[in-house]
Image 1 (cartoon, rainbow, N blue to C red):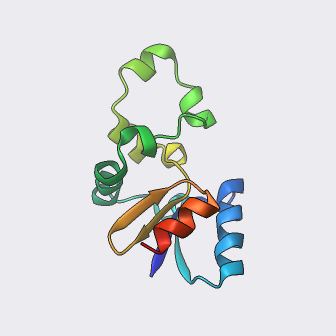
Image 2 (cartoon, helix red, strand yellow; image 1 turned 90 degrees about the horizontal axis):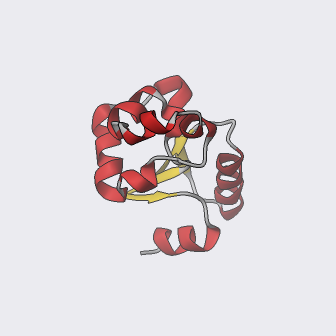
Image 3 (cartoon, rainbow, N blue to C red; image 1 turned 90 degrees about the vertical axis):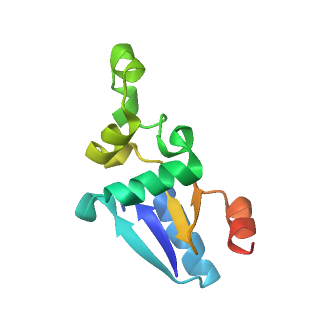
Length: 112
């Protein structure tokens, strides 16, 4: 089954939920705010997608860091502590990962 990782209050997450519901695609939702993220799952995201993709540099959590903090950032530790800085949504299906919400790209990913 498709699993979506993220936070419910995110507008992009809401778009993804609506899209999947409209398409009739069943999914499970992993809420970082309620459940956090296991170290092994975060490592898997980083291994599959890369730090640059998993770290949401557009969000306020990252942008609030000073330049010095950004330069010396341990991405793994930061994301474990600040799950709101993880790119949203991250989709997982059959041990494959897809980050972000682009309907066309998601459709292609889901069918390959």
